[in-house]
Amino acid sequence: MDFTLTEQQRELQDAARKFARAELPELAREMEEKDFSVPREMMRKYGEMGFLGVNLPEEYGGLGLGHLEALLVLEQFAMISNAVAFPIFEALVGPVRTVDKFGSDDLKAKIIPQVCAGEATVAVSMSEPNAGTALTDLTTHAREEGDHFVLNGSKRWTSGAGHAEYYVTYCRLSDAPSAKGIGALLVSKDMEGVSFGAREELMGFRGIETRDIQFDEVRVPKANQIVPAGGFGKLMSAFGLERCGNATQSLGVAAAALEQALQYTQEREAFGKPIVDFQAVQLKLAEMAMKVEAARLLIYRAAVNAENEPGGLPSVYESSVAKCYANEIVRDVTALGMQVMGGYGYHKEYGMEQRLRDAYAWGIAGGAIDVQKTNITAAMIGRRFDQRR
Image 1: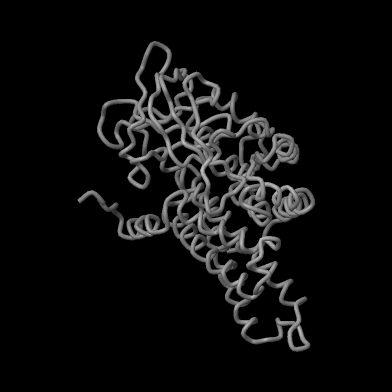
Image 2 (image 1 turned 120 degrees about the horizontal axis):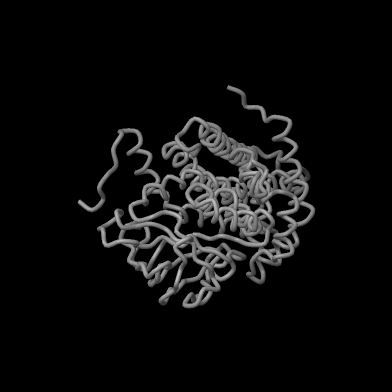
């Protein structure tokens, strides 16, 4: 068991850190103030540096590295802000991985090179007004007509909606009940019949567009089918990696809060000495550090052990443990950071209050904390729980 990063991993981590800290703080601040997504010009820079293809296949323009390497990069971007990190998240651990894992060779050859180059973003469209945690209640459906599917329905809480070019859309592809009828299509935003609702006003997540999507008789080529009806289990299997990415977004926010708190408490003086010399402050900083380090180790474990899992994806148990823990500690760590910074922590100019607001989103997105805990227990006892009875 080796806890040391390889030379290649350290170099990649350093490259991501240097790029993120040199290029992104000002942009992140502006995105927070004005609530817009990462501009295409910056996306292309991400692509040129290889950050959008770390663990994607070399044949499609990626670097062909592992999941741990992808998460090392994501953490460095998330330390600047979740918004500037979101394209990295979507490309390396999000819906692009569903295309890579289950899409046809033609579909992969069409989509993945665009993503790696920063020319396109892929979002996932899952939840509906009456289907969130109970995702198998979704009603968006597609019927076959010749060489197309005709898609109808509505989606809620789609992060990246309106900004992303493509959407991995969960829908009913047959009349079979519950999960048996569910599959996924890749929908382009410029297809006739695709429309978007107003941008949602959220507590945090500024710079990450969230909108409703409406599908009205949208003709989707059959070549855009990613998973056929009955493939819901396959779609869910890809979420082990997404959970690790979600956890890493939380980790990045918590790690940045710790870093800022350490700097502030050594510079800020009270009663003639730096406030870090007071034991009460020392205890808070130690608590923050313990939680950040533990979250990082849980995420790394899930990513490294994925190599031994079916399909090379993190297990439900290890990815859920990592996600739950990181989702919980980021709220604690950012709150402690705000406390040790006092009024400056509460002030918008200094960024800690933004971290606290963003911290709460990840324990809701991608499967709420309590839902993940039921997954953990189910994995431990070897059976799933029927929440409908």
